[in-house]
Length: 171
Image (cartoon, rainbow, N blue to C red; front, side, top):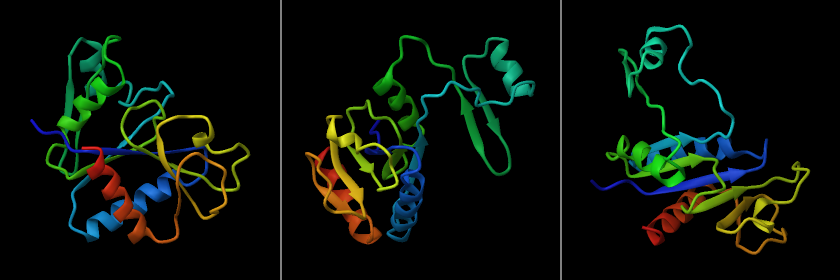
């Protein structure tokens, strides 16, 4: 089974990660690409609705619970303490194997390529100043002191092309 390539969009709070992901999704859609997304969070919370039947099934011991509705399909699968980072992405990406690309919003601690979104409103410097593995910083300010390239976020077409190049280089 061939898993689609993935790229992570990281950044500090309120720096525009979600906006960039949505803009890239629209641009890739215009190009005819099938793109999946994963939202990474480090906050522990219940994704399924407590008290609903699917939640009750999981509480009763189901290894995986699926929900099929006329509009959406969802899978809730608890992970074991032995599954970490990349192993968990492999499970997620298997569901997206029909896609050309997966964009993950978040997760600084991955081996996959990462782009950081940074805006001057951030009260802290870009992660790229001390977190290794960030391929480039996307910002409207070009004079940022980071050990990687700074790409303008003003042209989504150009940025999408660069994202596809990074993904191709890291396959």
